[in-house]
Length: 358
Image 1: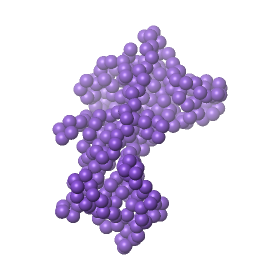
Image 2: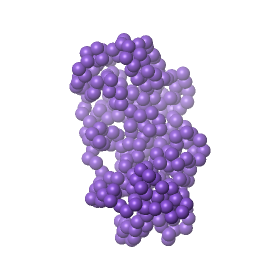
Image 3: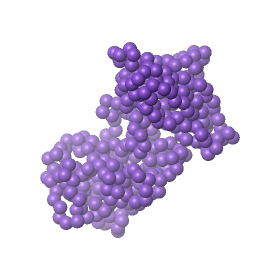
Image 4: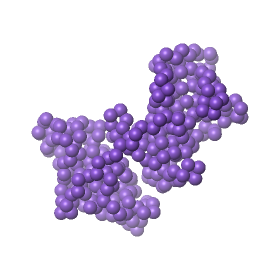
């Protein structure tokens, strides 16, 4: 497999793509990220469905691929709303190997040295490392900052190891990848990424609790769910949200796309008022849609309806309003939730919920 630079896909990309090689599919933001940032070369084929796992104490939706896993982080703005798992670190840890004890590598000429870890990246590995990166600026080409964002820092120098096929190769470990030299292959296939997604022991799936049923006559009521751990009563009452209206639309009245088979678009008109003087962050990325099992089925604003957006803003008093569109299953229970995971001024464990389809 060669290292190539892929042009960014449209931000509204959400088409499902399936692979007969592994009998797995991907879609939505994960598929978009996969296409934009290296595709098959960097990530490999999907080897499992999207599932919820606990990462550093928080539960995230992730999908495993042959060479890594993609994690949805809706608390982050693009492109950091999708992150690669630190599978290089995880694989070494699972094998009881301390990368801090690896001998420091030196610059043998034409290398790049990373003072953060004391290792140099050279030759064919450096060329491959520089060939792909997380698209940060939307410009053609890959910067070293983009390569660093995608693969992380080197954890070792070039070392010889026996891999899963029983053969020895020269490899270099990074936070999110293992680069392998395959001299038996002609360039550019002489440098490949290790199959860490296959090798790392997967984290156990977290079963999300089923949401408490809500009577139909409370469809437009704001419900506060979860532990009320904030000790500041004023803080817990300053933000006021109103679901003005919602509707389900197919292709006929949408400007850009049609939903995939078995899905429709949920169009939401929302208004938000901050009654207090403290700044509150409001953005479409903080709104999610849950299915009947409490799983997130769409993380953020899909941008498919003309003049339909709830722009990100910081409210210090005042109000804002806007429209959001989500691609959702055509049947089954749906809940819209406001969950500002990153901004703890709302109080830990708090979110707002509207039942849009009982």
